[in-house]
Length: 303
Image 1 (cartoon, rainbow, N blue to C red):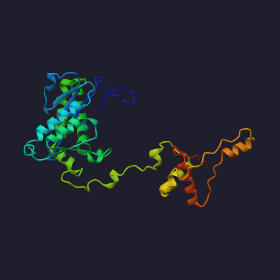
Image 2 (cartoon, rainbow, N blue to C red):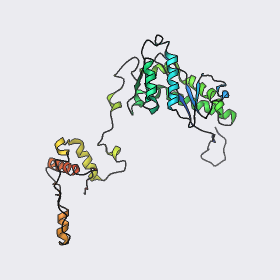
Image 3 (cartoon, rainbow, N blue to C red):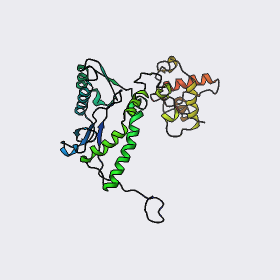
């Protein structure tokens, strides 16, 4: 229940206006454990009071934007190496780390460091983290829920937003609640990484969007002739000979003499034949030929 003015249907809630970017690099392991989270604060220098009430024992880094950078990614890799070395027989056994395709993860210095320490870096394919990234699949949803509750409780109690020196405590409580050993193990099992199960991910999840999909390529409602052409090309598969521009290349024709009568000039300019109504296969072949002669694949149609 809320208290509001009588007659007002919608009661708005006032929130804090001191928001700024803060990035947290979270790492989980297949055995259900987690590594030290790396919090990136938007600042130039580290402040000692950030470490007060650090319930999750997070590490701190700074950047002018609050986002990760190449230097921060390198520090994260050093944390990974240090905290997983013992699990890997003091570094003798190979370790595998799965990363998304962010540019800071693919720097030569970082990859060389990983290779020198017997760490294999595996990147997720583009646009596949919704199914392959265990953090997205099993952990971040719960974390978002716990963070929202923890942040709301803090703002209700203190009547203001959190400061940098309070972030470790508030975020840490949500983190400890969300990243339980069972949730972490589920992140690996639900994506088929550990235990290894290639059948977990279905072909439908990885299927790319159809290149001929009308809604994907043309979000604006298209006229019926365009829809008919798109549907026709879904079933008709032209050969490489048919779609080659060289196959349908026409000789360069001289420009018509503008001194000729207007009707004769128009007839010379519109020299292309009208597509026949039947048979359908012939119509599709000619339509393919017309499209193959254009630079942008455009075709003028009419009902």
